[in-house]
Length: 294
Image 1 (cartoon, rainbow, N blue to C red):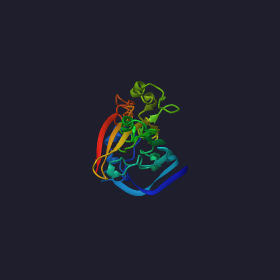
Image 2 (image 1 turned 90 degrees about the vertical axis):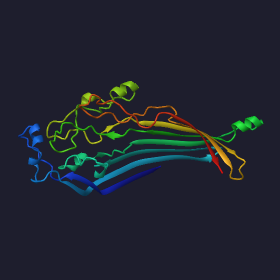
Image 3 (image 1 turned 60 degrees about the vertical axis):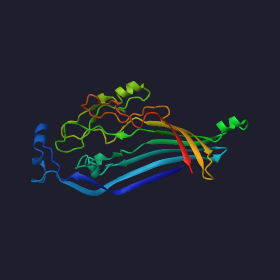
Image 4 (image 1 turned 180 degrees about the horizontal axis):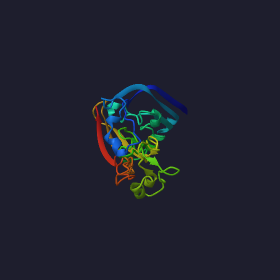
């Protein structure tokens, strides 16, 4: 059992140094039409400034259980409970949006896009004991290995961005959260209900003009992930000298053919808002392989 924590300082970020200042005496449409006229430094459009003033943190509880190989069996199990925070998860080269608000960087602080709050992985190998009597029984049942990997993890975090440019020239506005409590609906619903509406779409609205929105960055958690891979492997000798050996493999990926949904649609004006329309990972894949070593 261990605590693992890291902190990064002086990370690179970028923002619009010449961001337009919203004029409350004008309508939203008029502010959109006068973006360059409202910039502090006239004669210039957007001025992207790079700086090294951001930071990130990662804190985790890590537990592992290891049964060393004995009696033909070994297993390794690991669990991580972690939290990772940052202001910007990708750099500008990856075409990530600049910081949410050039006048207040702290409004962009939240879980990193790679944060998985819980992750459990267990792998095992079992040398299956074969029959000890009968030539046919020995030939069929000996030298088999059964192994597999179980992976369980919580969902990725995501934001729901505003539409219609409510800040009139400043990107990064998010929607307003209406009401109290978590807008993600219960996880014990049927698959069809989750696909049709992963979160309560009535709890969100586009923010008022000149407001960033009350929903924090990456404050929503998507569907979890579960997967089981297994394999059966048998080795045998070949008449190719000391190095001659063969191996027969049967492998099943996502053996239970579980559907792992990706993030829901987050376009608040989209007709599919809140629906699960894509998946992470592959469906069940079965394959056979024959390997010869010489």
